[in-house]
Length: 493
Ligand SMILES: NC(=O)C1=CN([C@@H]2O[C@H](COP(=O)(O)OP(=O)(O)OC[C@H]3O[C@@H](n4cnc5c(N)ncnc54)[C@H](O)[C@@H]3O)[C@@H](O)[C@H]2O)[C@@H](O)CC1
Ligand SMILES: [K+]
Image (cartoon, rainbow, N blue to C red; front, side, top):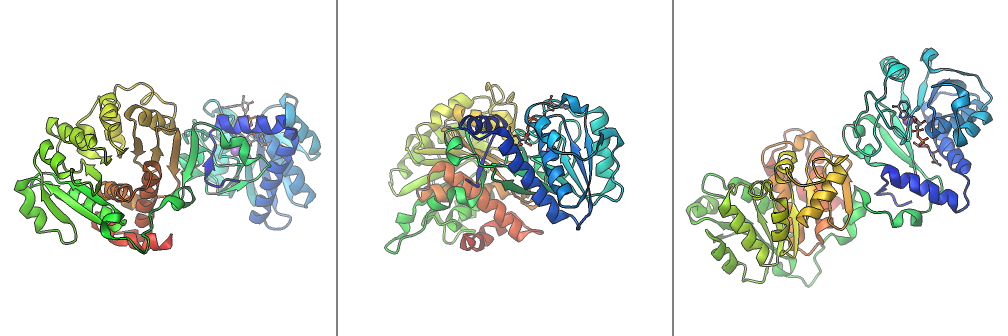
């Protein structure tokens, strides 16, 4: 199994279909899925403990019936509640139900008394509308009981593609999913309801999923570790890339310095801050390893960037919104370097995502790092972004429009590439929500791109490193700490 691949619901269905078409009966896949659930359940139950299994009307319920049979055979006391009449089950789910010869009661009659575990096999990836009525009431009862819950495939009520709660959802202690995680396991609020997630191999060959587009991933080191720049023994500082970060005016210089420090800490050989003349003294008072150059106009930026040693430019943090910023972005892009645009550089193109796309296409590689508000402003009139059915589809469409890698920041940051790849961050910390934290992220991406790392991988690595540093540091974190704690996380890789 490719462990960082994730499968959209439609792709999971297609992978099932292709595997079945290649000669593996659907029932064999379901048997493996149910066996995986039973195995996880055993680890959560005392010997001969009581387990309540909630089965829905589709194949998720089918997995529940398989698990019920296996656990009953092992001597556990099984109570199975089914939503709807048994005669209405069809296909593999009906076959799985026939193999289970224990009693089946109505979902409405389920209680959790003395139960050591509840297995939630109500709905999986086939959820199509909000949960209500008897199911919603049952979910509320189980949630109130405090009994540990093992979710089959995904907690019932969570949308597999968006991670949204459809009406209500049953929070799980553990989730056992099949073949690969789905976007809803990583996106909020779904992620918070899954508990510990494990993936069971049900025999869907990797090659079956290789050609799926878009290609979705969990943002984990396995995705980008091989492309992470490592200095060779014969290196010198300019071989490790030279990043240029543009500073804002006198009263707004801190953001750029935070970014510059991030770029240096992640391994750029040299970093220069391009500062308005009026702010040179302020910046000089705060910089040591980072160099300083005066730069007030697009023409001056062009002259500065005639030095071919500059490999990447970052623009936006604290820079100010308006025509002057737009002109600087265009001047930077024209020089064909790696380009990272954040904050004011993005807001300066509010409502003009297509224009920004044209500008960005001149850069060697371009990465945009919008938070939710910047994303909304930039793409307010762009088709297929605001009305996308979920955040990864919005991110992919956005990347296509701006012809850049887009980092959609949030508690479940998504990195999307115009080539159709997207990666979702699985783990982060709310301590990162602190002033200047985003500026450091901008600097980390810039530093990686300056060293020649491909844009998508650089963006994914930066997002992961930033999050991991925040997790490791924890309470009390301020933006300045991020760059200083980064080496520890880099060492761990
Ligand atoms: N061969 C396969 O396709 C495999 C499927 N597997 C399991 O099958 C699941 C997907 O099965 P299905 O596609 O049958 O989907 P589900 O079992 O998730 O649910 C589909 C059923 O629920 C109904 N439904 C949807 N939303 C509802 C709502 N809000 N209220 C009431 N009823 C609602 C639908 O009409 C349909 O009858 C996966 O999550 C996984 O657990 C596994 O067994 C592995 C193999
Ligand atoms: K479920």
